[in-house]
Image 1 (cartoon, rainbow, N blue to C red):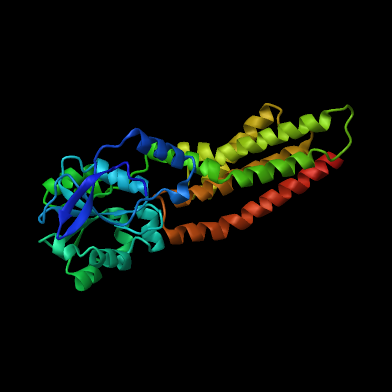
Image 2 (cartoon, rainbow, N blue to C red):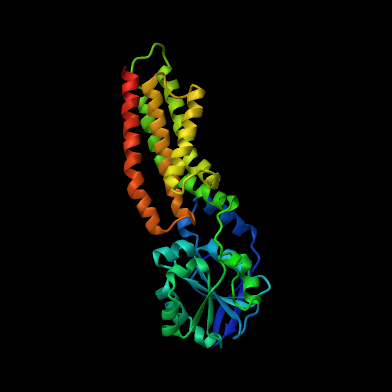
Length: 342
């Protein structure tokens, strides 16, 4: 467990509850930067159980969080000036929103932790604040029946917590509104870029080998052709992983697969005008098919990182898009081979 954020403990009901600081240190920011790039992401978590922040007593609020450290850090940072308790659930190192969809940030785990830390003996009220993005996993009436605690769904953003409490535990429409601004999308791009590296390496290897097909008039042509093809594939990868998320609201249509297809088409047209696609019509068409398929597939993967659709929506989109992406990619490879032979 990372303990740089624990500064002592508070005695309550005969138990020593770890006391955490509301200030993030260089180590926290460095860890955040690394996990954004997929480094140690699967192990970036804190212990479950109860933590104290400020100088809480039996009347202080209880805030629920996931044991994903980014979620935990976001909460404690925004509890500056508040005396409270933080109840951390075991979400297997997954953030609140995703864990709620998977069921780890859920009713059963919340009930288990409430009983495990004997929360009824620590606070005299029966009120716990659950982040709104965790609402899909928590059935408030069951929590009430099994523990006696009333669930209050807090705001979407942790930085609205102070205003939420000041308003008598009521959220305004703005607090309930889920945004997906450029800055929010941008934080997700590095991890997705690294996450899809094996797709990238595989595609680079395929097009490089394809570049060796055919007869060439001078030494080194195949090698140059191969590097050009790899460059195009890399641009197609960036089209789906970087460009599409970055300009997401400005691309028409709702489905991410279609958005990625559009950016792939634009990229193909640009490369065609720069004479970076093929030597003949078949190769030019092949690059149109390959780049649009790659961009579409990778952009579709970003759906799971967004607030644009539900789990059922993602499955529905994949059922339609994946077969088309496979057909486009296969047709692109076939046409590229034919273009090099003839």
